[in-house]
Length: 325
Image: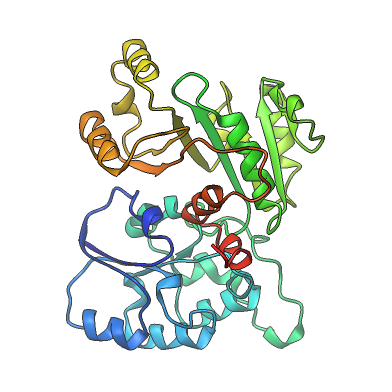
């Protein structure tokens, strides 16, 4: 059984299909965690780094490493500039912290396949004072993609007909651009042209892999998959518009659709459901909803609901640049 210590990424970690014996949420000092878990038996402790007070000071992580068995710790990093620095990661390795990732989807892999020093040695720069630390992500991916710390390729798939993937990607791209270098691609379609934004790209299925392989300098790539391959992305968001007609049509077309979506990242889009409705939806469908998005105005440059959704997806720089929310 595993322990979860979460803060900003509580909902993101909550999508994991893992056994949990205890879960706490908030900000804690290392001393707080020691007092609570020093005599507690668990398999692995998954720690959202934002749950550790003063985590951007790497010496706080040194204190953590001195008080816990690092073989049992899995650290979910954020993408703040301090944590994104190669020297910070190098020092984590020096402290014996080997199991770290920015992709929540790799946490189950690390539970069963913890890294050794050999797996993360390339992230340790023994000449930290040289000023020539390699850019994070330049090393080969190891530990089942657990150390792919930079680029996120997020695919969007309409589960119900016309669930709004194209417009949602357009809005997400606009809001992410204040903090990230972003590309948006649609597959086997040309709906992007109606937004009159020349930076939006269309690609056919055959050229998608080539397009992605030549986009390594982007932090985020948003892909409107349509009927394209899910394997091209390292994250998939499944969009459902929860209207009665659309849901009934979906289930008649595929009675087992929610079995196929179990443990997937389901987002309700253009939704008018409240929390009680969502609870009923989850019970009846046997699924878990990652996020509930209402109808949104795509003409807004900054949308509070989009901002909250991006933070739930783990884009912490959005939160840092939009403190008014």
